[in-house]
Length: 237
Image (cartoon, rainbow, N blue to C red):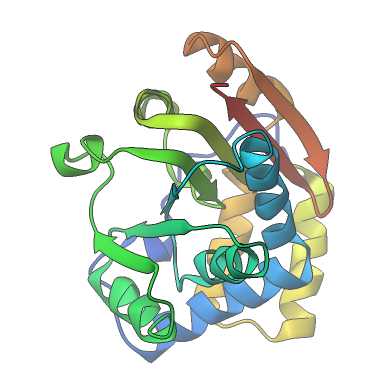
């Protein structure tokens, strides 16, 4: 039977349980980070950040908030990039799982400019945080459409420069390729089941365009990138 990817599925992932903790979760976080790195996902987010700050290199300090920061690998990559290029970056990771936040803090302890906060992005406390750039790497698909519209509105209101979204292209080909990837990397149950669910919760280009229009974004660009990702950049400058 063929795989129908016409519509996003409404199914929670195992990792959406914010009370989860322990070695199984730690392994899943590290596997997700490793696969994202190998498939070029981190480079995709970094290139989006470069585009937004290219005309603002004289800014004294650039604050970047990473929503769904996981084990913090993207923030550490940004910190290293900033150091190499003499950029003063203030990097904030947001995650709703306390265990995940503490693990990210442990991995990032040598980075003085990275901090983490355990927050639900729909709480008032998050809505009041101001920043220059909002990042969302492989996290937006965890939300339903009404939640996405609300969250993107908060990002746009609170960001000075813009937003970088890096998320999955929903397709049968990417689903089958990930099944092969599961075998090659011997992924644990969480990584395997959540990865397949993530693809089916991913996006088509027209859906991202619709979100942009509904939120009245004036300057945005959506590009398909390997490996079956969309880079969606919303600029305010």
